[in-house]
Length: 411
Image (cartoon, rainbow, N blue to C red; front, top):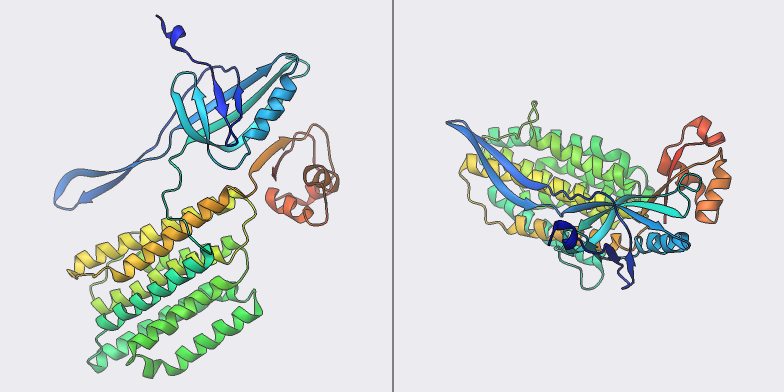
């Protein structure tokens, strides 16, 4: 028996259970192995920590030919956009649970290769949801997890802020004023997008500034008011990207030094103050996602990745500082924050399967935006701006899209 005898029929079983066979050309697969590298000042070499691997990627050119090739390609193309995971029966690598991902393109060479369609798609192996799914209302459960974090984080702040001298109080007040100014500068623009949120943000900020001399003697109350201030702009239904960027930038500036390395605090009060802000910035990103109406699958997945990345960066920073200070962390606030982030990631991944997926076409002739919007979406009034924003069309393209222009749309 030779290798050709071991080749199997290539097929894809959609989430609805329909099986589609296709021809293929050269095949391949790839897989990213995740690692974290650590260097130590008194030792040569690098410690490489294994952190699992991503799903395996299977790029395929799926070929349909014959008298009914167009109908077969149409059915297969539609199946790739069904919600949920399917099964790939690979001619070499076996049967794998997969989700079609990335750009899916179709080519019908009617002149040079009639009776044939080639659909280019990458299947990614999936293990299903690994984050907890909300049992009832997802947004309510995320908000409840954030509130539990607020209580734990405020208690941790109160326990570790010891201002027993006038010098400590003055130093603390000066630094706290700087942190508050950063919040106002970094989140004020986001808060301004909604009048109600802007009023709440301003009221909390004014309250803290007016009462800071008293509040430094009441760290529990100060912590709660600070967290409410930071989290208020997350409730604004503004662009999700703007909110996530604002919270990420504030956290990064706090936990990184001038060279972009992890900042280390020699003073416990300085560290626990920064920890209050940095961890709450993560909850700001968390709350931003549940106060947003996602339209596309890519947007939801990108938001989940952003929240997870921010949480990992803040957690790494916190671990490094606890080690440097030789401090013992009960982990109560961390566990609540981790739960909020996990619920958020699970929620976003779950809803992504019901959201629109990206598709691309290359125009075969010059088109007007109005005409193309009507063709792609069936209406113009509520989709014209969305098509323009999705593609970032230039001024001249808004007047006329040229032949050969690649256009992104969502189905």
